[in-house]
Length: 135
Image 1 (cartoon, rainbow, N blue to C red):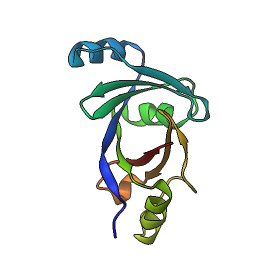
Image 2: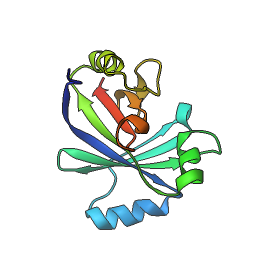
Image 3: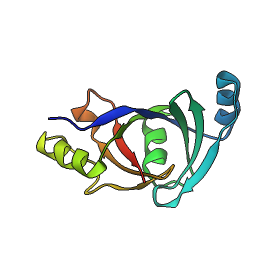
Image 4: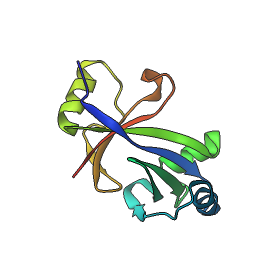
């Protein structure tokens, strides 16, 4: 079985405030290339291009939502790793066949013009895994 992973798409980093943007601009030597508010998740995303992959800063925009919850439990840090797949629907079905616990009932719209779903970290050595496909 295979999920059809092509490459690492991005690494998501949960941040408490927008000061992380300046830190990462200095670390990476470049500005963000895209900012997007994902209202359904109460999160502001900021993307840096680093070679073929990206770093995604995730800032909670309210007290509800997965990033706010993550920050309350763990504080700032790596939130997830995202892998690009050939076909998100096939990857979703294969993940179910593999017995992986999925955090979404179906692939859904995410940031950066992607269709996404998440695999529970208890099934992936403690790492929240996102699978995504460009739409």
